[in-house]
Length: 416
Image 1: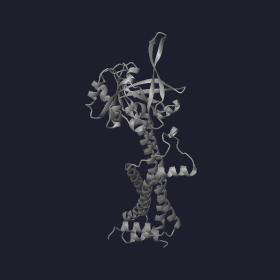
Image 2: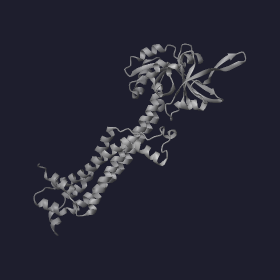
Image 3: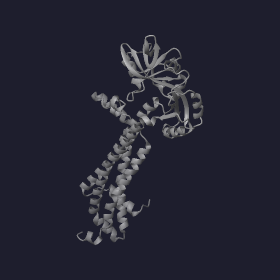
């Protein structure tokens, strides 16, 4: 098959054993360096994606995405708000809630908690609470029976289990003949959930039926607010602005970005900085490629001169070494992408195997939110890394190729 002269000679230079083994070693090192850089970059980005996905899973499984409340600390007609938010295409579901502070006491242990009053039938649409239950059932939260679902850490601190009795003390005061005393009520533990450590859900959240919460916090038929579930959680800021404009002036709109937005921005910034720093590995390999090609040009000066005397143009000489350098870069990138994908898909199992082999624990959920190394491979990252590495390899060939185009036949062949 016919191939242009520059491509044919460039590929032949790449395959041929060089007379100078040092040049061959540098070219091989450049290829290996590019492959390692691409592999490490893909793997690190996949691990960062894995951490991001796990943290999002923990946050969005329990935290409200958008809430509607008021300055009076209660909504008197939440059904009207629920009917109105149905008009927004961003909203998939809505549910009322009651929230309050409290102290839980059991087995001579006292611990503060955030108490959520929920509608059990709607909760499966609003959060992943039913999926995080390790004991009990959400259907056990029946009105007037005063059942409670505790986080796993909170239950452990109280020494509570399914069927245990816990006393909830609220800051809502009651007037009695002996004076003002806080309201309290004994609850029966009907469930325990485990949403994962890191954000305090397991150690400070407790759920009761919304009817019991209304009675406990003396709200009557009112609720604390309305929770919204969105089709896309990242539409929360935009929807919040719409709701502020359309709803009553005394309405308060909160969304997850106000509490967790800065945290996710920090993760994204870390990913960007890791990407830029690890690009330096590929940059170093590309610099080695420049060195090896410059030495190849010097080594092949006589060959270039002969081609020039046979009619080859400076552009042809330049193209020969662009083809050679780009081929080295392409092979390095291809190997790096293949190894990077393979490592990213198996890095969790590899790290777990190393931990078991040496009996160590690299990650602690109290620090990193997970106790294993997560990985999530995204093809957009693979494509981006591959393209940038190829571009850097191509740019690295330009100066040596330009040097080749400037070789003068008379000077190169003078001492041949």
